[in-house]
Image (tube, rainbow, N blue to C red):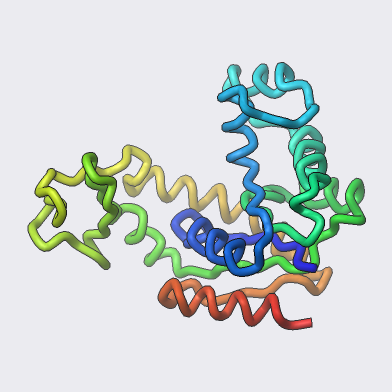
Length: 217
């Protein structure tokens, strides 16, 4: 049974790989981001008191680690997780990892895959990203540019850039990632369940390497 967490920097391809892995292994993709978005939308199906969570969100505060862990443990107790699961965005901190190990030993992770990408390439992946506001097609001015400068190949609409895809914001996101992730990497390395794959490759090659890790004992 695969109990997996994917670790990757912003722009590292975690979302793409999560989707492919879950499709092949037929396991649920559990994202804390999705859970909290469901709470905001009023579609959350868990039993945790949402008022407590919304109170933190409305104040712009981070949800305390103990609450995050309780919500994740409850979600992993549902029937679709009986044959394994993939965690995306959790654990985010060393404290979350330690709390999860302590309170959910029966759900303890057996694989943690780190998608490793060079910081310079990450910067290009994010700051170079452009989107068509009409059809949603995504380009990258460095890797997959449109045929005509700044215009969508499909409908000719001028491409836009997300506000948080500027260099300063991306650098801040990377610093937060490094600060939070380093202790996690050490934690899971000591447990012997951390596996690093080369995220500089094409999507299919990264996926192939991840599947090789998951097949290993």
